[in-house]
Amino acid sequence: MMVLACGMAQAGKQYHVDSLLRVLDAVIDSSAVYDARLHQDLVGYRVAYDNAGDDETRFHQAHTLFKTYRKYRLDSALYYARQRVQIAQRLNIPDSLLAARLDEADALKCLGRLNDALAVLDAMPHNAYISNNSQYYSLYLSILLSLSQMTTDEQEVSRYQSLLMHYRDTINLVNSRDTLTVCVNTCAINKGHGRFKEALQGLLHFGETHADMVRNSAIYWYELADTYRHLGDLESAKYCYTMSAIIDKQGSSKTYTSLQSLAWLLHQEGDTERAYRYITCSLGDVMSSNARNRLALVGEYLPIITAAYTHHQQNVATRRNILIAIGTLALAILAALLSVIYRSNKRMKAMQARLSESNDSLQRLNGQLRQQGRALVESNRIKEEYIGQLFNLCSQYISDTENNRTKMLGRIKMGKVKELQEQLSTSTMAQDLSRLFDSFDAIFLQLFPDFIERFNSLLRPEEQIEIKGKHLLTPELRICALIRLGINDSTKIAGFLHYSPQTVYNYRMKVRNRSDIPKDQFIARIQSL
Figure 1: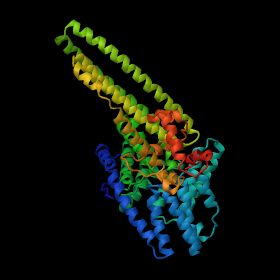
Figure 2: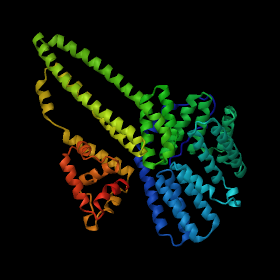
Figure 3: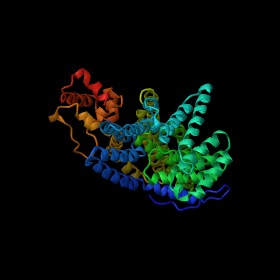
Figure 4: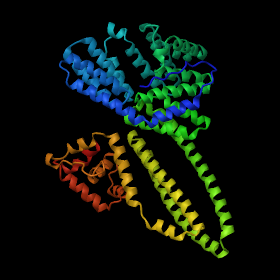
């Protein structure tokens, strides 16, 4: 990871935020490079784990995999945490088993399974190892903090706040004072009592005396930003949020909060385009890592920022259209006869009517997508995000349609009828459908990376489906993917894929006949994959 050489934050210092934001933009553009490096590291760690000569070595290698996956893909982190539990049980070392259980609880907490995480922690014996273990108290603290944010009952909130302060005091007792953990925890205690200036002074002093320790610590910069924000120093807060986000993105972390907080701050300041880019980047990272405990924050900010971004784009388009209309009118007055203007206006009205009908159809489709989204919220949060991303594709298509309409309007007013006819005679439906299918396949396999393997397990060995074409899914798999998402109506599937209902029915029958599972259970088995 690149070392970020910069001076420590000082209250009232004028930061060069704009230049640092450009650094963050470049880092986000290079996310694939950082992810590839991390993936290469993970390959090496998995090879070391698979080739470990004994359980003790394998136990430590599993911990390395857990720590790496914890910031990148939480379901894999939970897998290796549980592998450690199994290895520790074979080794029969009590403290090692407790350490593995703590990692398991940590992964469950990050996945949003708070009750499961609490169950793991509550089952641990309060021996000397646990009583003096900072991770144990930090996990309880984090879970209680999430629970306190989820309740609206004042008595419950008060009880949680009391427990939070107790665990924060305990964390300071079991850790050395000269550590970042104690520094950040003390800052939280001060902020909990409203002592924000004291919290800031403590963070700055620690940063000055431990510059090497905090320079590349995303947690430190985030706490510093949050403290500045509470004190009303938004410029300093923005700088520190940006520092934290750069460190997170360079480390390929997907389970962060700094970029979401920065997006919200930029939105409040009117930097709509950058805020929209950052919040959508955060959404993609949250979805890829399955960090459900971070999804609530993104879900809170995303609709507001998206609405502001859409409004901003509409204003830009309106201003552009006004300028184009003025220029076109001037050229028409100088270069065209009244008869040409009349015919052009007549053709323009006809074109506007067709475009209006097309826009109405797209608006109805958007309304249907919103209704489906609201229905899917109650059953599956992942499906809601899936429909949301497909909705963004439709929104992009609307923007493309509006751009084409503007171009065609200009050609009509300039009398370029032949060019317009050539444009309208060329259909891009096949390419649009191909891009839609590619996007659908990629998003679906990101949400369900082992879907093809699980689906093939339902089929007879000689009937396995292999991906041979350019698409990630075959038509049969794509239909079954929609069924997995809860869309079981053949007519709806046919409409989405631009097939006939009979074609969809034939594909479904073809796939079902390749399995030994009873026909009345096959669809249910697909939906449970």
